[in-house]
Length: 566
Image (cartoon, helix red, strand yellow):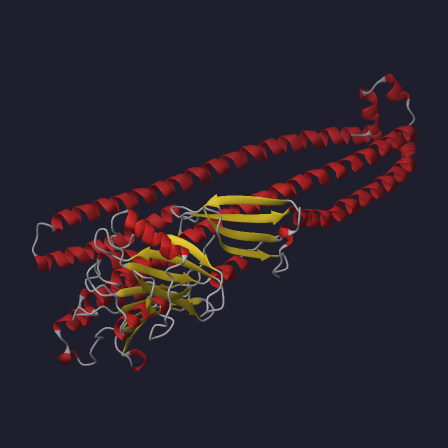
C-alpha cells in the first residue's frame, strides 16, 4: 500500500511524520521482526526435528515388528514341518541319510535358516542338517530344552507342534556367530517327553535387512523376549557405518517399543538425541544465512526508500488509483477462477466416484455370476462341469482384475506384478490336484493399461491352470515357475515353465492328458488373447534340454497412459 494511503488511515501524528522518519521506523521494525522470526523458526524446527525423530522411531518399530512377526511365522512353519517329519509319538526319530536329505531340503529352500536339529528326550542330537552323520552333542542343560521338557511334563504330554519357544545363542561352534533359536516339542504320548525340534535363524540375514532401512539419524534396533532376553541388537550410524552412539553413558535417546503380534517378542528402535541435535545444528546456518540476507535486504531497501521518499508523494495519487483498479480486477478474476476450479474439482470427484462405483459393481456382478456357476456346476455331470470350472476360473480372473482396479489410485491402470502374484496364489489353492509347487518371480512393479492387462491376465490364468491340471498326469508333484521380466527397452516378457511331462513334438504320440493341453480351448484362447494384447507366444518343448514345457509371452511395447484435454 502506498505511503499516502498509510498516512491517511493512521493517526494525525503518523500523518505529520516525515517520510524519512517513517522509513527508518519501518526498517527498525523489520530488522527486529526478522531476528525474532529467525529465532522462532529455529526453535520450531528443533521441536519438529525431535517430533520427526519420534515419528521415525515409531514407524521403524512398527516395520521391525511386522518383519519380525513374518520372520517368526515363516520360521515356525518350517519348524512345524520338521516336527511332522519326525513322525508320530511311537515312531523312532529319523537319523538316517534319507531323513537328513528331507530336512536339508527344508533348509536349502529358506535363505535365513542356518540349520535344523532333532534332539531326543535326553537332549542328545539325533539329526542335524549341518552335516551327516550327526555330530555328538547334548543340550539337556540349555534353556530351550529345559523349557520344552518342563512344558511337556506339565501339560501331560505334547501333541505335534506344541508351544513355541524362542531364545538366543551367543555363539555357535559351527557358524561362529550368534543365532536365534526356535524350538517345539516332538509328538509324544500323554505324560511323556519325546524330544524337541529346533531351527536356527541367522541374525546376519535380519541385520542386512535392517541396514537397508533409510534413516536420517544414528539408531539402534533391538529384538527382545518379553522377559528381557536380547535376541538381536543392531546399531548403525547415518553414514551406513556401524556405531553405537545411543549407548554412551547417560546420553538420552528417543525410543519406540512395540510388541510383535502373536509372538512373545518386542521390537525397540532407539535414536540418540545427540544425532537429532547434530542435524538440527547443521540447519541453523541456513536460518542464519537467511537472517543476514534479510537484514542486508532491509538495509538496502531502507536506503533506497529514503532517497525515493521525496519523489513518492508526486506519484502516490496515480499509484493509488492504479492499485485500487488492479486490486478490484484481481479480486474479480480470483473469484471467477475459484468458482471455475470448484466446479472442475466437483466434476472430477464425481467422475472418480462414479468410476469406482462402476468397478465395484462389476466386481460384485462377477462374484454373483461365479456363485451362480458354482450352483449350476453342482447339478451337472463331470465333463460339463470341467467347462463350468474353466468358465468360472476365467470370470474369477476378471473379478480379481476389477478388484485391483477398484483399489488402485489410477482408475485405468493396474500393477500387473501384484495381480500376477495374487492370481497364482488363488490358482494354486483352488486348482492343484497334484500339490505342485508354484513360484512367482516378479522383482519390479509393472503398471499396465487395463486394455492390455486384461488379455495378459487371461493368458497367465490359462497357462498356469493348464500346467497345474495337466503337467503332472502321474500324480507326482512338480514345480511351476512364473517370471515377469523386462523385454528390450519398453517391453515385458512373461514366462510360464513347468518340469512336468511336457508337450510331445508329434501329435500322433500324444496321450490323453497331453492332448488336452495341446489341442484344447486354452491354447487357442491364449493365441487369440496374445494377438489382442500385441504379444507373441512361443512354446518351448524340453527347455534347456530338461523336462517340461516353457511358454514365453513377449510384449514388445507396453501401452502408455494417454492424457486427454478436459
